[in-house]
Length: 113
Image (cartoon, rainbow, N blue to C red; front, top):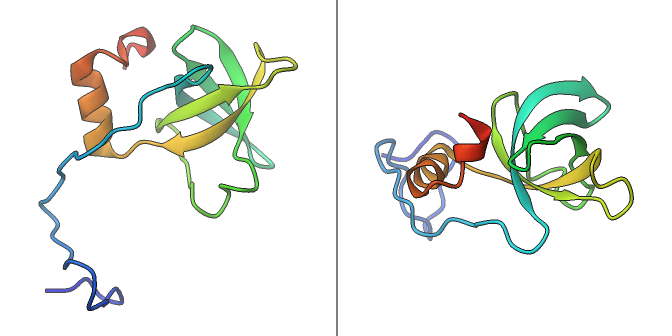
């Protein structure tokens, strides 16, 4: 059965119970994991990062239509080169199955989620 409004003959049909984790993006170089604490408005939000810093992060225009975030979401953030301890960009949002995988592998221990 196809989900209403999502028919595409080249895609596999939507199955609600499938939550396989094939590949999970892990932090590279200067990237840090974080959890959205609160939204501030105007596209900015408070993010608690794994390096124990609170940053005001935004979703850059390149990702704005692709990433929709809410309070409590686990995200991948990149601190700015200038004022990197206080500001950053959100470049990826993890899904529920990916968050479970990160928790099992020990990536989220610093967040106390």
